[in-house]
Image (cartoon, rainbow, N blue to C red):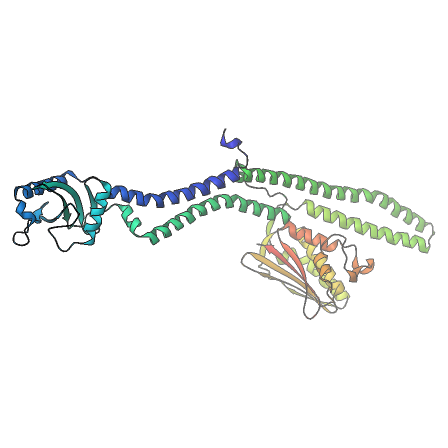
Length: 455
């Protein structure tokens, strides 16, 4: 069966990766003693074997060398390129008979050789031991060992075998590195999917998972493909909904126009009454509401319209002039603090409409003063609109005032609160710029709306 047809590919990848990783670490650590044992039981090299045989022949020729305590130290020879070699003779009981001071190394080597069952050589830290070479003298059995006092190169695994703490530390680090690479391999497409989901959630319905993620053959790739299909469906549904709202609003204008025409003819004939005036007023309100709905639909449909790098002060110039005039008519003041050199990527018409709605709302509820201020940060521009009105006491209202047709408790009357579309249009326009808009109660009183726009 091919791997591509196996179910739960992520499960298989995780299982195989962690299993292979742990198996590799265990195998490396477990092989060290085996490698050391294999090296410890290595056969004796031919030149050392020949050296032992020559010494045995010499002892057999002169048996008195075994009982010689002083005088000629036959067990210390200059061999192997004039290097000092020491020999040890053990009797049948394993007791050394030609040296009173026996090092721990030779005792350990004798046990290793006895366990191996054949002549071996072993490199300790500062000496090379080899043997044994069995021989007989006068009917008694002896064994001969050699010691070459010289530091020879040792295999690399001896260092790790003798430094267990360091070996375990390196094994843990290696395991962490391998698991980290696996986590990065699995986490990278998930992070890309997270960014795509956040982009769609923030209003960018055109954002999709990248091709490298959708091309994967595992569950992550399937998830990316499903995400793209979901985003396509959401974008199509939202656009269809906005078009439907726009179409309905546009179609409502036809009977509304006829109604207004009939009212105009009635007034022209001199037929007027309180009921007719009320009908005329409601028709005007309906006309204004339809205009707001069409504007909201237009802003949401044009969310991906191409933007230009323009001056913020120049873009809002006419809006600020109109707001300043409106504030003066209501005996209020408008403070403007926007640097003319402040530039950013924007779509002028929706942004101007958003700021206009916010300023009108602030002027309506302000007691004496409204301020609009803009300043730049490294990656964004902050636009603040603040009034000294009563603010919004209810926290739930404060979070929901940007939703369509939502009106706070303090603005339920149509005359003061409108239809709840002005702030919704402002939010849609800011989202079209990939920005954010929030409202907070100011200190000591009033409302502050903060807009964050990317540069």
